[in-house]
Amino acid sequence: MKEVLIIYYSQTGQLFDILKNISSTISDENVNISYYEILPKKKFPFPWKQEEFYGAFPETFLQIPTPLEVIPTEIIQKKYDLVILGFTTWYLTPSIPVNSFLKSEDAKTLLANTPVVTVSASRNMWIMAQEKVKKLLVANNAKLVGNIALVDRNLNHISVITIVHWLMGGKKTKMLGVFPKPGVSDNDIKASSRFGTPIKEALLQNEYSSLQQNLLSVGAVKVDPSLIATDIRGNVVFTKWASHLIKKDGEERKKWLVYFKYYLLFAIWLIAPIVFVVFLLTYFPMYRKIQRNKAYYSSVALKQD
Image 1 (cartoon, helix red, strand yellow):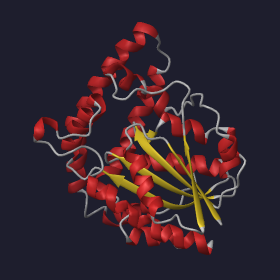
Image 2 (tube, helix red, strand yellow):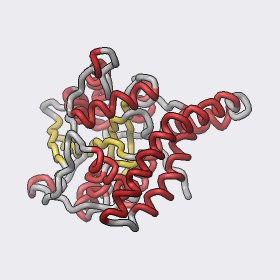
Image 3 (tube, rainbow, N blue to C red):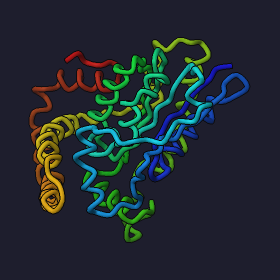
Image 4 (cartoon, rainbow, N blue to C red):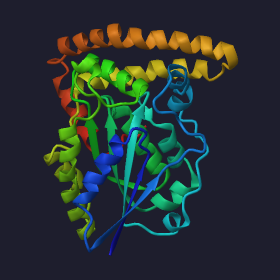
């Protein structure tokens, strides 16, 4: 009997639905699947209030752990043949609960010498968050063997509007009855069951060398090259903002978080389109580098610093 553990944190339930669909084509009489939901001791709100949403930025981006509830004994004491790690992206970074787990001693116990498949559900920019997860998996002596990254397929600025409607309103509905539904589409969530087939084949054969390529062949990852530079540049700027904000507290912190909010709106609505235009203008001169980046970020490899 093969033992699979699905570890996740899903505020809205969207990611959990994706993971259940994937597991539906893995589980059978030869495969037992267990679930571990990461539970912070101090729960994060959903729906979010603006002050709490922006207030979570410094700790999220700087990857500062928060205390977690104790993992059940029946989970922590078992050895697993495969771990599927589900995470969402907050501020170009894995969410605080997932980051906290990956930096815990329990993660070292559960993930050491264990194949891991990562599954993310995000608005559109997940690449740098995935790079951070890769490094944390290496620190836990885990082996990343597969990655699935599902995104909101709507236009960038449309998805900004709809995701705010969802996160602040708490319901995955069409804003004003006109805008598309936010997040990963219902069709993509339902179709995610197809990813379980190559995962199960690799699990039963205990051979993962071609798993990521097999996942790519069924659409597990689509790298948008126009967003790579935005993601990388965003991390550079966020580093400066987070390092500044983390030193503030009380009313001073609240004041600076308001400045950050307006910077974020400025960056999304004005800077991001400029970055996209620059990408288009440099596409042909940078074509080979763009193709190398697409291949790398579609893979499970990790660049050496």
